Amino acid sequence: YNVPFDHEMQDLVRQACEESGIDMKLCLAVIQKETSFRNIMGDNGNSYGYMQIQKKWHQARMDKLGVTDLMDPLGNFRVGCDLLAAHLSYLELEDALTKYNSGHTGASKYAATVIEYMNNMEVEQ
Image 1 (spheres, rainbow, N blue to C red):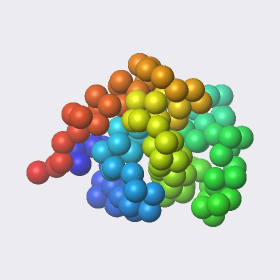
Image 2 (image 1 turned 90 degrees about the horizontal axis):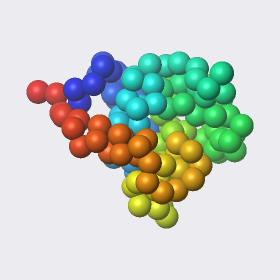
Image 3 (image 1 turned 90 degrees about the vertical axis):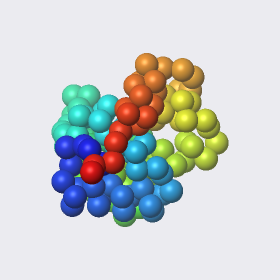
Image 4 (image 1 turned 120 degrees about the horizontal axis):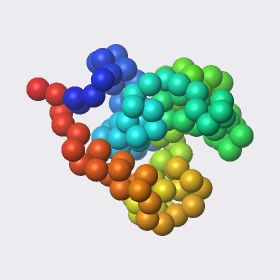
């Protein structure tokens, strides 16, 4: 994909997406919205990595997946994709994205932006 990740990083995203059954474009669009493809701490140190995972809400998910370091790219992608898959198992895309971001469902600017990024993402030639 035409994103600022090299092939090695894209392979890690692909691995996490395949494991959880998430569309890679969706995962990349969430990463773009959350951190613009940067592995950073957010929310005053409460959100970790590319997909901005909060340990306080997702420790059980981390334990289930064997993820101990949310700043490790693959671990971060695995937890984020697993969370998206859980939401998508019972919600439509817009509600799932809003819930990923805020814990609530419904229409949101966040979801609209992620969907726009996803729809505009191109495969690298």
